[in-house]
Structures are given as C-alpha cells and as structure tokens.
Image 1 (cartoon, rainbow, N blue to C red):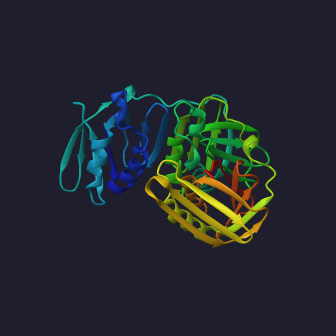
Image 2 (image 1 turned 45 degrees about the horizontal axis):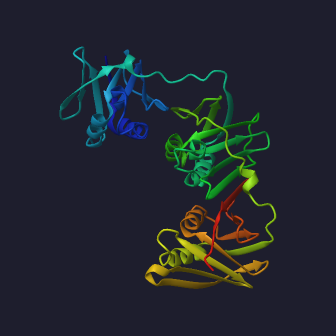
Image 3 (image 1 turned 60 degrees about the vertical axis):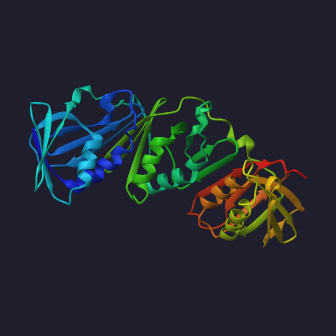
Length: 372
C-alpha cells in the first residue's frame, strides 16, 4: 500500500490534529495518528477517547487500508522538510517507509483496527453557523470558564440554541460572560455543555474561516463538520446553573469610560495590590473615577484618577483586578459601560461600540469586600 502527498500540506493538517493527542495516554494506540486510505482520499484521525478529530486530505494513490503511525515521530520528521512530495509505502514487516528527495526513513506502525472508533451520533439535532462567528463566541467566553474538577459543569461553555438566537455562557462563580447572537438561529431549542479542549481546537482552526460549520448534537456528544474536518466530542454531563438568576436586573449606577485607559490604569494600580487578594478599589463620584490599591504588609499603595461619564449615586466597590483585566482585555470596543447597583452586588461590564448587528456581550464580575 502506498500514497504520495505534499510534505507541507500534510504537516499543516497533522499539526491541527496533533492538538487532540494527550502527552500521556492510558492506551498506547492513542499516541498515533490513524491513516485511513481510500483511493486518492486519505483520512487522518487523532483521538483521546473524549475527543476525536479527523481531516480528509487529497493524495495520489489507488490503494485501500488503514494503519496507525506514531504521531510525535511523524510530526518531528515532517517539520524538517522543505516543500516536496513524500512517498509513503506501508510494508508487510510493520514498518512505514517514507521517501523524500534526499532520503528514506522507516518507522514502525500499529494495526489501524486497534484504533478506537469515533462515536456515531444517534438521531442528532443540527444547526449551521458561520465558522468565524463560532470562533468569536468561543473566544469571548472560554476564558471565563472554571478549572474546578469538583464542578465539571462550570469547566465548559454552555451552548443555548433557540429559534430566537444563540447564547454562549461561561462562568467560574467569580466572573460570568454571556455572548449572544440574534442573527444566527437554530431550528429547535437545545442546550449542552462543551468541554474546553475541543473548543480551543475549534477556535484555532475557525478564526479566519468563512466556511459554514454544521453542529450536530444529542444528549451525550456533539459533532462539528466544516471544510475537510470533523470533530466529535463527548459533552459534559450535568445541569448548568441558572445564570440568569445571578445577573442583577436593576442597575441604576452607570459608568462609561474609555476601555484602553481604564484597562491600563487597572493594570498599573494592581501591581501595588495585595498579592493574594489582588483587590482594587473603585471610588466613583461625579465625573471622576478613583482607582486605588494597597498592600498593607509591604506598605505599597497606588492611586489613579480618571475622568468618566457617570450617572448614579457616589459609591465605592472592590474588585479582584485579575478578573477585571481579563474581561477588559477580551473586549475590542473603544468605550465600555460598567453598571452597578450596590457594593455587594455584581458589576456588569458591556462594550458600547464594536458590535455586529445582533451581537451582544454581557460580562459580570463579582465584587470583593472592602476593608474600610
């Protein structure tokens, strides 16, 4: 069995698929790529049992068969080649021979039938959406998802589809991001929780893609199909917390400020904050925002004054600066609005400009108790 393929074309596809493979696998076969050849189509798959991703490549061949080739060895080899055709010959003595313009390389392969089969989705529902919109939705939410193994439902991104639009939510109980699109709709109501790893893989591939992505899902798995790639992953089991209940509805105090200026100021002041709490204090009065931090143990303190547009009562509120920085960093707008009700209620951060038609972003950050 043999096939011929361009070295850079193969490397580009394998680098994407390589993101699926764990550094330490329970099953040795998972350290391999599965190469499945069918005439001039080569399907390469990678899996970690939870997530399986495969891509279809065009090659020159008239054979059929499947083998599992060591991923790390193959990737390291391909990275060193300039663009050229490579000939792969699968020998009977369990070795694959790769021939380049200058040499020959042999590596052992395993039987392709040992490789775990991807799950097939029984009776799935499906939704289509542009790739770049899905990538934006993941980008805007994934940073807010938690890392707590004890609360697995909060370690993923919650997808909520309806006939009115799509909503993506992530929270770790300290911060929450809700990203909505009214310009993309689903045919029926559905909700599921996607784990972070497959989302990070999708985000990387789809960032600049105008292609449409077909998302199919049932109670336990989701499948993303686009261009020449298919990703199937197991969903996180459990019920997502009622996030609407924590978003304060009445927020009479509204602060509007230049995002970059606010971000840089919080960054600078937070250097002087307590290293365990990262606490900064926002004091708003009239058209002035005073940002301060103090680390009493080391006698460090900092204070900055910014002008802002503020409607509401004078107030003081404390935040963890790391959460605030992460959120401001994740917005692209020139100006942002911070809505507050009371010093012990969550603040809501929203961008004022730089939104597409039908796009909404709501970020919620929990306050911290101020030491008076």
